[in-house]
Image (cartoon, rainbow, N blue to C red):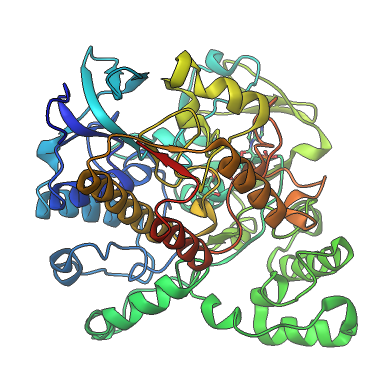
Length: 544
Ligand code: NA7
């Protein structure tokens, strides 16, 4: 790239999920040399690791798909409204092959350290396999939900049956037939896995610490010709998708794009009989923040919406005690919403038991099963669906040393992540973070965010190249302003309410500093801001 620069490649890209693949493709199209690195032995990121039964995307596939290549878009056929993991993994592999990206990636290799060298203005990237690449730029595409956490339960490794993790599920799947299965965790992964495991297992015991806000996905196969008609209309679909705050016009089967264009009533100003009438008419949608304007800003309104949600659960679940236990105790809308296929009905099965850990916690895992304050549960298999060190975990697990040898995680662990636009970090020149903390990322369709970030980054690199510049770095003042702005967008609402224990806040990881990490202003607004900054000569960045 730069004459005389002692580099092996222009750019090292870490991760071969949708983010890494998109970045590699765009870099190659723009004429940069690059090296991809991936810990797994295949492409796919989230869809490579999370192979648990029932895993499925919550955005419709025509939107949860890449628009970067016309060929990819035109040649792939989705079979359902929302694709399951197997189909998504096939799709990612198709993308890697069709765009000939595999040859750029070193698989089964984990980046352990990256060190900035001020004198040569280069990064040295090192791996657990002994690789060392010197490059001008690094792009991390390491995922927001990719650093698994092992729950701190005494005796976890003493269990003599099978221990499985949803986020590292065996490649060939697992046959639960005839087994007594314990499932720990009822976030998205646990909720999706529950009905599928229940259909196979001899008995399923679900250990629930926090109940989930979940609603039916409304997934279905296409009607004849439906997908072909949509594919014909892709330009329009993409235009609507990219103009929306969520980077998707639909969440599950719900047209949230349209819903967000109208201002709903306040629940606290709506008489109870009207609330119930709405419940009868709209079902689960009536018990979401989309239905009421005050639910995300007023905790009393939130409790009122939760009452509607509880009513719907009572209508689904036969046993009153189980129905009551399935009602969440934290605010609606504070955690990422979940969509499911037959979750609540599953608790009407004879072979399923819900253990409400609020009535007595897990005390330890023994060789025979799980012990709680409510009694012991003998098991053959334990499945942990216990989540991730979200948004910062994957970055903090790498020794990233920037200017003056500063370790990035030191500041991030002490104060929470600090970043300008969620794209770059002051003191760490030439390092870009795809869907980093401080960007819309997990509040959006991830593929839309990935496409926006990778496009901005490659344009930025092109600008540096044409200007004969070697470095770009976030200015500390611009970063501080951005961090303050991101925090202000979440302030005052249920997302940061003291009773909210979301991974957006890091509240699921013991000791993690409580900071709301994603940018909540909408992907459309964010994109405009990024573009304005680029047009203004990369305002807030120092270029040299
Ligand atoms: P989540 O959403 O973080 O869910 C993890 C679940 O595991 C959640 O119910 C936790 O309860 C529970 N958990 C964690 N540790 C324990 C222990 N020690 N004992 C009992 N229960 C525990 O992870 P997912 O994989 O389901 O989903 C992550 C995202 O992926 C999701 O939001 C989608 O965007 C896709 P808690 O709530 O902490 O009380």
